[in-house]
Length: 68
Image (cartoon, rainbow, N blue to C red; front, top):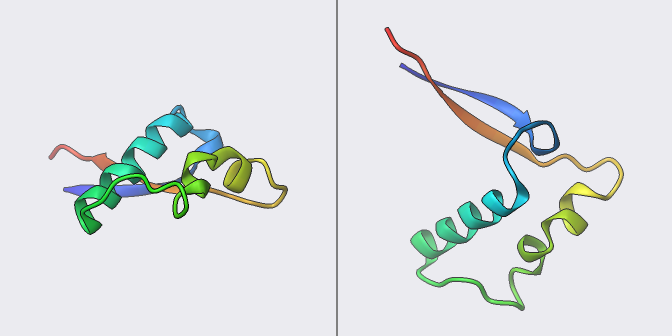
């Protein structure tokens, strides 16, 4: 059985670099193109856009594998 847990990126051991890699992989897989500077400045500068501004949260759905 698989469950997920919602976590705030700032409170996890996952680095912003790992999140960037994941996001660019998903963009490549879903849309067929990689990093485009005009479109993806927010991902390239993820801390400035999502982590540093007061009141912002970057939430992750982290899959938790459960053994029966």
